[in-house]
Image 1 (cartoon, rainbow, N blue to C red):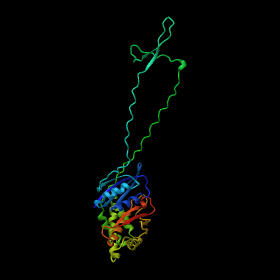
Image 2: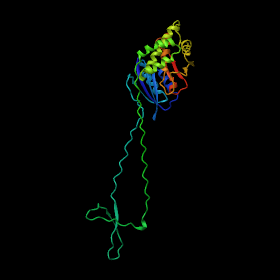
Image 3: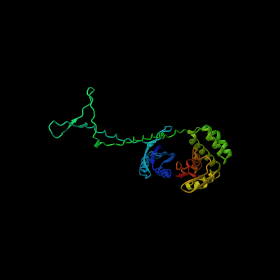
Image 4: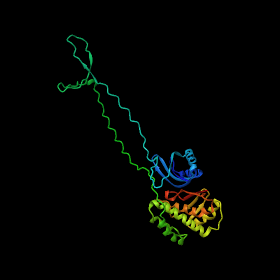
Length: 321
């Protein structure tokens, strides 16, 4: 198994994660994390996926054929490495304007005085020479009949200063805070299904970079514990049957959920609030621990498609095998 970081550029944001997530799952990969960022060039999407090494070319071909992606790149994922998005606030080089042609020498028409005898006046063109300090040249007065008044041209307005845009940097993530999880698990189990006070305590206790991984790990611990308490008598089940018989009732004891086939909708999640880090990783880990024992090994794939923390009405988890 390998982990890859997929960076892509798209024009529109609406439904982008759903479309790209389906491509990732159809190519044999599991979506571990994702991020959308608005940029002057478009919508920047960053995905971290895991799957078989032999499927990397299949994934790249599917992304290349995706009509919503303008461009993309696939790199090996390195934990803890902050990597800038390849399309973030790109500047494009422009060719320098051609140099102006050298000015031609200026000539003046000097009228020579006519000789004593009446002969036609001749105009001789004499190249203008640089003035010498000893003999300064006096410019002839213009003919009043051919004097033109030129209006001065207004000076061009100064160019506006560009607004600096900070480059996009993928934030560093840390592993789960196992010590804090061990301290809070007894409280969560004793208060179940009223688990959210313990989870809020987890949010306040761990570092921001370790929040997602800690929520995911605590969700797995909780789901596995609940399966052993109430659902261990179940044999092997199909995915849809497992979700309807185990997943929906278990989650429904804590909050309002609805399974529509294309995704599991979680409404008014206390872990996912506007302008707050997403808490969907807990529910993903919870379902993995709860449904994993009744499904074939390594067949369960769950990733978040929408979240209230990012402005969606509901949190939606896409579940596939």
